[in-house]
Image 1 (tube, rainbow, N blue to C red):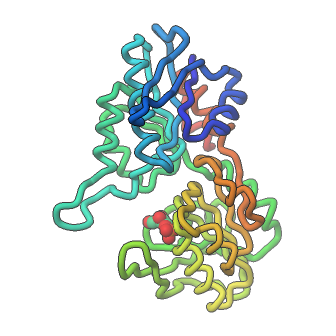
Image 2 (tube, rainbow, N blue to C red; image 1 turned 60 degrees about the vertical axis):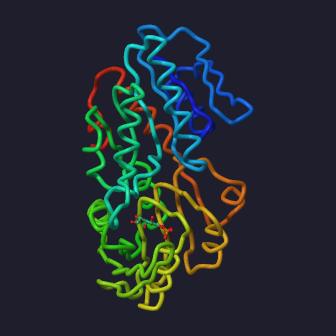
Length: 310
Ligand code: R5P
């Protein structure tokens, strides 16, 4: 087995490598002066089972291109099997036409990864489960509950909890968490008036005097969570916490969260932390390295992935 890391999230790649007990393969990922990406794998990969570790997070296009070029280099280097490991699959939010003459970029990215030469994909908490069908190669979509649930149990032991979906699209995820924690469920009915803004309308369910725990796949501008936290407090919620898998946290998100009604935002390390994220006392990061490492090992040894979630 070989593990190769792109530049998007070196610390996660190193942690996965340490967990699996396989060093990162020597590779040089460089730029020409016009910013074209060049990749040279500096170890023999002929006949190897290779995992390319790369989140297509900010800068999304550079990181995506780096992934594609690396896969191409491996294919031409006669790797036996190439698994694209995307802890965060960028472009996932563009999973349908949102208006006339708009793209379905998640499908385009799936096509690009497949055409580059990936034999399979390993990712986490896809924005929409049906994106799995955009690929005609096997895809494993890990869920973050083995990382989040122990932390929630420790933090909220003995407390009156309600799991909250900050929008209607996340109800399945929140319901699954509520079931695991024997908690109630509430839903925020959010209306987004225009792109980039979000507005909270209604809280469906009883949150009064409860610890409200929002769960979501992505926090980007932070608008969804901050507005939802405000609504939960207005409806009598005692304290508000959020558990979100992918901390995109663009623009002024970190400051917005610091000013919000949220006690803590818990994210994972699928996306490399900016200095602002690292410095924020409101944001806690949990690592997914052991989970991804186990999945990598399972794929390599042809063992069940679903067994990791039992
Ligand atoms: C939306 O469907 C997603 O699940 C997230 O709720 C959304 O991407 C969060 O975006 P923002 O933090 O910019 O409100």
